[in-house]
Image (cartoon, rainbow, N blue to C red; front, side, top):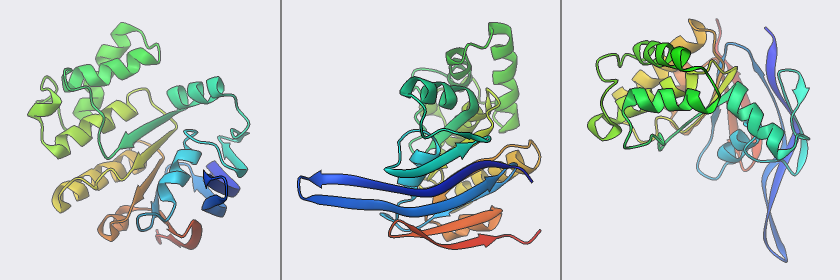
Length: 231
């Protein structure tokens, strides 16, 4: 299986004041293969969100390199990183970050407008994506009229709409109850193994990890364990 994302010797330090520096990540090495669901797990403060931000070109490491689709991305300009995130990546957040005045359909369609997709394609694709996540009967409802799980599925529909190569999800089930969270994880698994997507997500919930292909455990900014599911 081809590697789509690779991190080599990644470190990230934050300067607290003139005399204090905190090392959030230390010598991180990992690989993500295409068509896999990969989890970064760890307690709060372990470094998993810092790592996913660096892998997703939202932040820059203090040291080390990140390679995406065979190309080094850590040296890109801010403009080039913006273009990379807009065209080849997508993000799903715990807060879902939907526009409250827009319907589910409008939220998904608007995301494609930002990447310059023609109108006719946007209309068709938005409907396809909402059907894919099981919301064909709720696409004209606004976020406030949807449950937490439905809102997260709209966010996933938005994330897959422009057919990215890689989706990052930061604690996507943290605000959901257990059955709803597991339903979201099952949807992720279907998108990976049926639709051919690649997903990297963070979680501290051990119940969500049974659905994943690879689990990286972080503790105090280091990877302490790697577990791969036996196929």
